[in-house]
Amino acid sequence: MAQADEDEDAEALVLLEVVCAAAIAATTARLQGDNENRLTVTKLDFNAL
Image 1: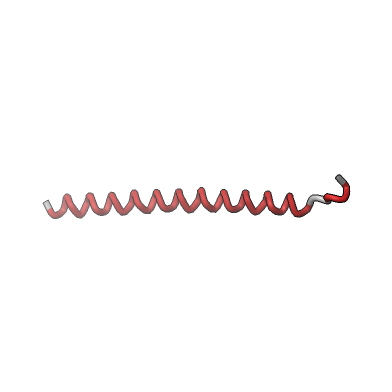
Image 2: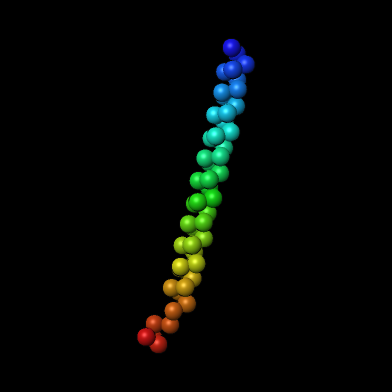
């Protein structure tokens, strides 16, 4: 019985790691996209408009 509990705990930890890794990847991609958008906006020449 104790082995089954340990296996479930290990599975839960692996699942938590996967969810955290996915969240970090999504956040990183979004921040990179925001950074690229800011760079595009700051490069605009408003006097030429």
